[in-house]
Image (cartoon, rainbow, N blue to C red; front, side, top):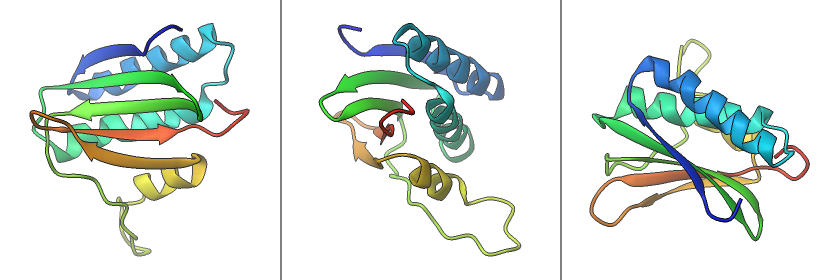
Length: 126
């Protein structure tokens, strides 16, 4: 992969599976396991659907010096924060779960508006 691979999906429930299948295909062509990347993409695209008014989400796979990075861009300026959910909460654990699976993750504002949420996949499970 010379540059980043990317797909733009509409922000709707069906797009979560589309993005997950796409990242599996991209990483498969690179002979990398896609399990954790699929979990990451599912969480991040779901968060765009649940927490933003974005019409589309852009999913990218980038080969960086540190390893494989999965990024999701949306048009919302609010940066995500991993929260601690209590035992009775039905949600709020996704980013914490994702953080336990990846080397590191973060979010950055994007010039012109919106943000990118990224995750550096672990070695050997990329």
